[in-house]
Image (cartoon, rainbow, N blue to C red):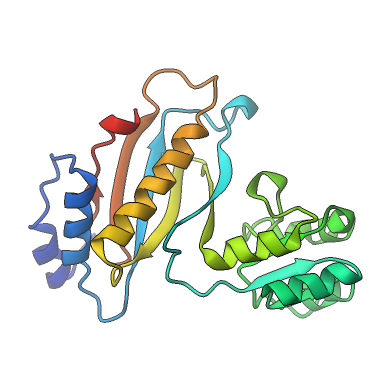
Length: 230
């Protein structure tokens, strides 16, 4: 793959054979974020598990102390008073069955996270085919199926992110923006790694963290030393 001149110059600052300490890695990621927009900083975590086995699945959510720098739009499926509660908590949209045709037929997707009360999951289940592939299906493990819609909405707005394995057993998550201070990014990354360490399945054998790298949207990857999290 042919890379642009700026990328090639940025990549020269990184030694691909080195696993950097978090503070050094963050510094390099900020230095090599050379796009004209405020790039997202992402963590890519390859884990020593096999997600094809139910007892090695990793999925959860964590509130990053400094958020992701992105404004997240929240849709809540609820009934009665819970609709008002969700809107009061800061949800962008809240409602019930009347939202189904809007999403199914009109292709309305002006939201980034979906929360549902348990009594609405029968209704939301009808949207599985459209919400599932987009990773928008509410899930109890991620805290998005709950009666406490106030906490769910407030956590998401405060910077709660969901993490899960992809088919290659890698977790890809945003941990902030290139404009964040180094300390803000360090705090977010350490919080994420702590959460994933705690989520280690009992069935996982051998080395848990196979590799962890950080990168900005357009920048090269920087490998992290995860010895403290092994």
